Amino acid sequence: HDDPLPFMAIYQPRVIAFYKSAGAIGQRTLDMWQRGWFCENQTLQPGYHTFKCPLKAIFAEHMVRQEHKWEDIDPLTQMLCEDHGKFFNFKRDDGTAFTGHFPEHTYKDWEEWTEFKSTFEIIEVKGTDHMSIKADKRFKQVVFDTLEEAIKLWSVGDAT
Image 1 (cartoon, one colour):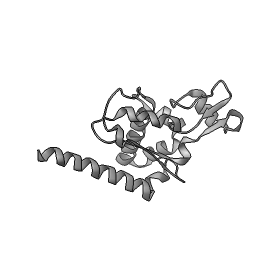
Image 2 (cartoon, rainbow, N blue to C red; image 1 turned 90 degrees about the vertical axis):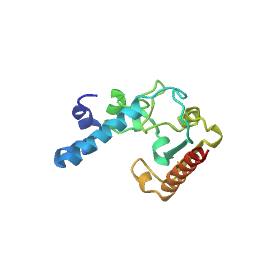
Image 3 (cartoon, rainbow, N blue to C red; image 1 turned 30 degrees about the vertical axis):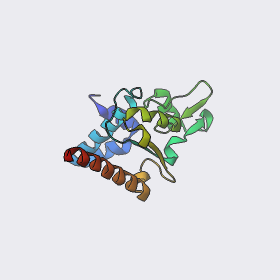
Image 4 (cartoon, helix red, strand yellow; image 1 turned 60 degrees about the horizontal axis):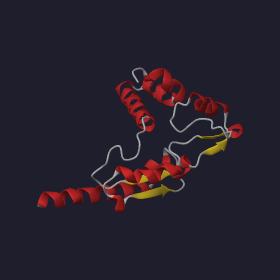
């Protein structure tokens, strides 16, 4: 937690290269990646906290269906799985490993994180991965529509 450089040098070498070359922006980038890593790995049971707003689970198609036979995984990814640097990435007893972010089956449990269970939705953004989803038109539309719905809920509460 306190010294991200050795960890990121292995897991995100491009982030370290940017950190070393970009001054304050590089530091901000390193901090962002480190916080993201904490979020991905410090998982809590669904329902530990309940959001008082709508919740959408949005995933990139190519990041959730990443089940592979161990022998089909490249040596670097095998090493990362053996190190178990990500919560869901490790070699299983059956000789397979998940190499994405969150397995698809985990998303349905996210409904327990919101009071708005009737509006909870799981949305797959086809043809995207961890990086390309951010530029996807459908992804942006879902995010902005959801934010607009939340703002309307706040406005209703203020009018009473």
